[in-house]
Structures are given as C-alpha cells and as structure tokens.
Image 1 (tube, rainbow, N blue to C red):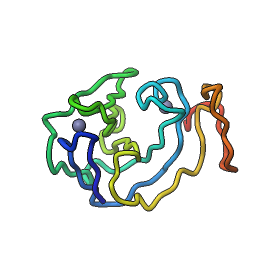
Image 2 (cartoon, protein in one colour):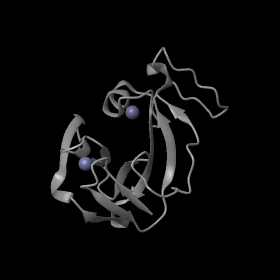
Image 3 (cartoon, helix red, strand yellow):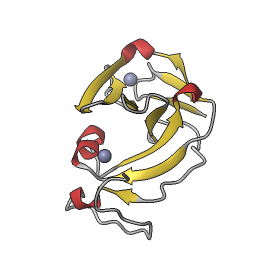
Image 4 (cartoon, rainbow, N blue to C red):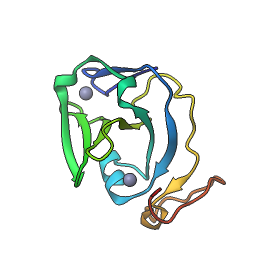
Length: 131
Ligand SMILES: [Zn+2]
Ligand SMILES: [Zn+2]
C-alpha cells in the first residue's frame, strides 16, 4: 500500500495491515486537516517504510508526546508519532494512494465536532477519545 503527499516529495509504503480506523472530530485534528474530521488508522512502526522525502518531514507536538508529522513543502499530514507508544504510528488515510482495506468504524471526540458538519452514518459516536 502506497501513500504520498500533495507535492509528491514524500512517498511511503505500508508493508502490513492498518487497524483501528476511526474519524476523529477533536479540534486539533480539525485544524491539522483543515476539515470536519481526521480519518486515521494505526500501523506498526516496523511496517512503515520511507520511499522518498523523509527529510521533508516536520513534526509539531500538538499535545505532550504526540508528534504530528507533515510535509514542510505542501503541508500534507503524513503520520503521528507517540512517545508512549513507539511501536505504533498514527496514519491519516487521506494521503494513501491505494485502498487501505480498512474503513472507519467509529467517530471519536464527537463532543468537539464542528457545528457545520452533520454525521449521517450509523457508526458509533464517542463523545470523547477512544481511551
Ligand atoms: Zn509535500
Ligand atoms: Zn483528534
């Protein structure tokens, strides 16, 4: 499974399966994505392989120990690193070029949802985070 940023400078490959896909409506995800929510999954760090542009990555620590990585040229969100869970990465689904083979199974942080967006599917809605 391949992914890339908007400018094409960053390319990566996932050599394993994604899991725990969800739509996060927290205000940090909304701002980082510039949209109503962030669709993201998790991947084992060992399954993430850089193909090009690792040097273009910039990280922003949006909350303690949570490092959101994006392309410094075009701003595409690429992955999140967690100090507490170094074996896993958070992976926004938007930059993927192939079908991730997983689908978001729930909405989280719905208490922070944008007022201009209405959830119209039947997936479970958690007011706060997943844990
Ligand atoms: Zn880019
Ligand atoms: Zn979030």
